Length: 67
Image 1 (cartoon, one colour):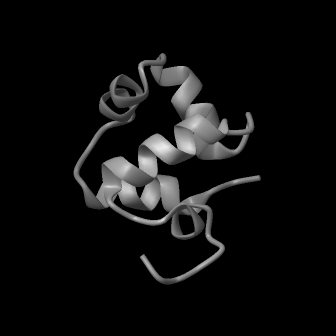
Image 2 (cartoon, helix red, strand yellow):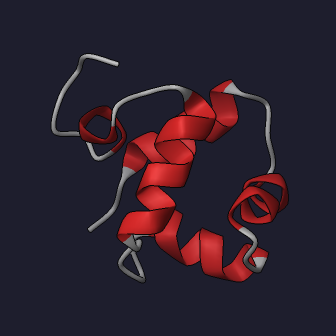
Image 3 (tube, one colour):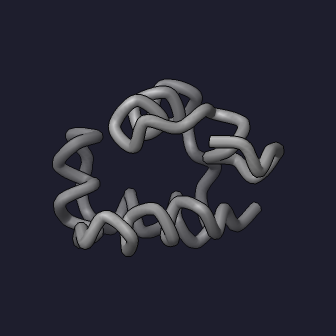
């Protein structure tokens, strides 16, 4: 499943895939696969990104439009 908000939030924050991969302590290619929906993003990464971007996990996953 492709999570467009992962990419949108990253771009809005003026961050590179490498910078977000560093936040998650993973390789850029791994993060790219999460962003493009090639690999399922683990729950711990969703939580970490929600905290990083200061949004809800539902917003991050596209289940809500409320940040």
